[in-house]
Image (cartoon, rainbow, N blue to C red):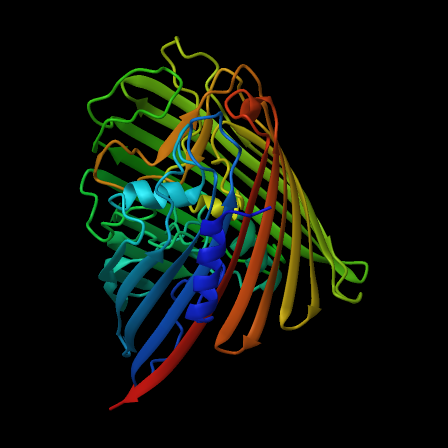
Length: 499
């Protein structure tokens, strides 16, 4: 399947480097702050190191285009210093990223996988690297009764503002809710952060979270870290925790305002019109209900998420929507505790490139890889019907298999990829689109992964995904099959520096 000499050389380099680093996108993230956590007796120094080897066999382009087959290695190293006093928490994190073997000829038509994006936005280098300030923030607790304030450069994940206290609900949130609309681009090697302020107010079962932030460059961009000053994000989330009356259920409502005037010339829509700079102002209003209920010797779960959008898209009225409906059941007492889930995601598309209305759901700044593991599509103009099964052969091993049937919501719109803004200026908006070729059939993906906790501080995981493309793909590419594999690991060490 992967037979090129370059792929074999990169795999050999991985073996030479040795296994020190990586984890899946969920495992790499810190949990949301907990106002009740007790302060440590000194500074904590954490060292986290990820290494990932990726192998791609993208859809075969027509003769004379880019090379779809390649492999590369990436490493991310973080050094973090944290301290919790009675009234103040401090976090400072430095991050270094480096690549080996990025493909220089994997573009055309468009990016042929993530390696191409890393190369093109990494100043066209096959081995980019950078050191920068990933986080630097303070959190002041109980400024007023129940109110905490966090200021500086921080992480933020929509949907994760309030822990429910229910382990099953939290597991569903990590996989199927967190970062649907706002996230740190966690799975990318560069990632993104947010500069600004966050406020959390808690009273009884209700938690209100407000943010006023600007994203940093990152994602695929080598020049990570600088604030994108021409994007403003304002948001508020109200979370209602499970109560005696509303047992095993968490409810959230949210509103998010996104304004973008960056000096980027790409306009990701179906009009084909040029742009001198971005001109986007969109308000998203939505709600989520997640439940997990004991049932017949196991546990059933449900998730319902929906959002309506209103605003302005390059001078056109913007009206769009997206929703997800999912359900599952886990046999908790059976061998391997199998967990079966299925659902539907709909993200609206634009019905006409020539009218005055923009109807494509805008995914804002998500971590799209949580919902598109092969990264072949973004959660825009898509209908995704999926089924998944998860199992645990042991407490240290987790297995997962997903199958997705993918259709474009509107054949008059584009096939979108991306995860939101990565650069302050240039030609890359953060989303890109390929033509639909008059079809809505994008294809079928099958994805399998395994996660192994080797020691409390060291874990390994692997993924393989295959996509069989439909007419949307074959109208542009010569081949209809894509393969994507990776192996990654993470090493984490924490040391308490006592006074």
